[in-house]
Image (cartoon, rainbow, N blue to C red; front, top):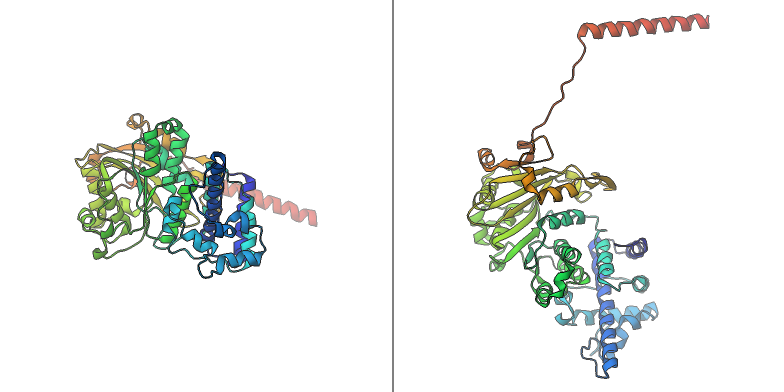
Length: 491
């Protein structure tokens, strides 16, 4: 867990960027990330040098050559601001800048290094660079938990939504969904709209928290470090941020794919994953010719929130599970495409649960009402009853401040989801209950909880009009008597 000291250090760095002229939150995070990576490269080389000295052999993994020593973090952090700035901005014949060197270190230094081609150094002044370097140097990032928590806190400071309806998924909602699906030892996990890789990171953290013993198995360690995690993201900035987030959480070699997940270029990814966790873009619209053809056969639509559901069905193995956040309109939309995708999931596969979330969950980024769908790809049906839960509180106020509060349905949601046999007899006046397949089918595949929830109205008895009139007359008489007494006192 991040400490108050670490928060204060990150806050100071953030404020330095803003006062130094960089006000775009994503730009701040990206520049911060580059500097963290340069510091990390120096730490890796230092560790390699210590190993070489112990065994009295040359350094096996050279990141900085002899003539590049002044490009190392441990060297330039002690130089004057102007000299340091020149090391980042002025190259000469046959000599790279510190930033150019970072872009060319190669994939052997982690997944982040693979996606550096579009990276741009945007710190405008020697003073700001020196200020930020000195502040970052004070952060103690000795272990996976501290590094990961520090970066997650940095990401939490994004205060503006992205384009095409993309915005940061609250980490407690991600954790809830991961706790519900409980990643398994053999799972191959994918997020087809990875963003900052929050779902993948949370899945890795779940394994560390609940199954440390798995890491004693060499086969699992290789699986965890190579092919357990896959993220797809077309935005190069978010791809780099996601790569660094994964790396700082100890996931060194995930598969990250820089493509539009819905396009023909991604058509080869099918029947490949056993678990998908995602919060795909809302409100986006694509032309049919920009969407891979097999997705359109599942759901003929231009709406991204519907197309991504079709994509996930294509990408899942038979028996694979999916937990996905969708806007409320997906649950009850009356268009042919809306009904098509709902009936596809319910009739041809197995819809397990629908968690309706309050509209304030995504504030301050957006006020849209959302739900989380949990389903299993079967290809042969299997939906018998669907579990609904009406989340009313998530542990934070539902206004723009999103301040912590005591009320939260999340522990109850997780507990009940893992004991669904006890939900069969729950009345529909409760927060959670079961709805049989036939009833959903009869309601045109509507998955809105309000369609099935029963509201109990309390009967209120009022006095008769005659009694009310008598009471008013009595009050009027008392008022007149009080007014007369007041007049007599004045006279």
